[in-house]
Image 1 (cartoon, helix red, strand yellow):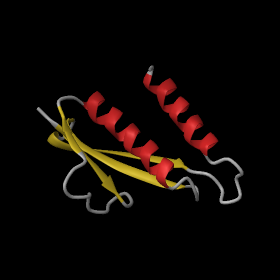
Image 2 (cartoon, helix red, strand yellow; image 1 turned 90 degrees about the horizontal axis):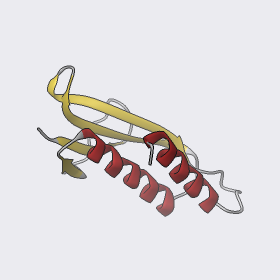
Image 3 (cartoon, helix red, strand yellow; image 1 turned 45 degrees about the vertical axis):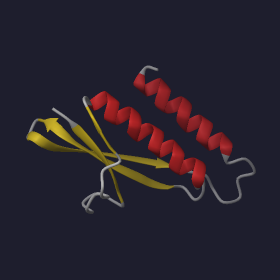
Image 4 (cartoon, helix red, strand yellow; image 1 turned 135 degrees about the horizontal axis):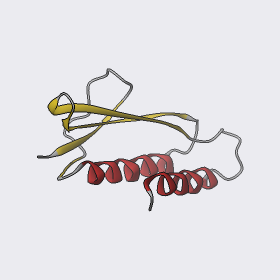
Length: 99
């Protein structure tokens, strides 16, 4: 079984094509999603916004279950050090994932 990771503009929107990757397990897809979230914040730290991904793979509705993940992250335009938001988000993700 495999899981595909996609970016989506918002819940209900069609996913990006091609997928960002294919993974053997959900944890692998989730780790790649976390890295993509951090990369997006690194490229564009402001403004605060929803960053949405979709993992598609085995789940309660079958082999193509949609697992949407939405994170609100980013910093205000006048923040003197937007890298703090990036590092705080990285630390938060590591903490909730037990890394």
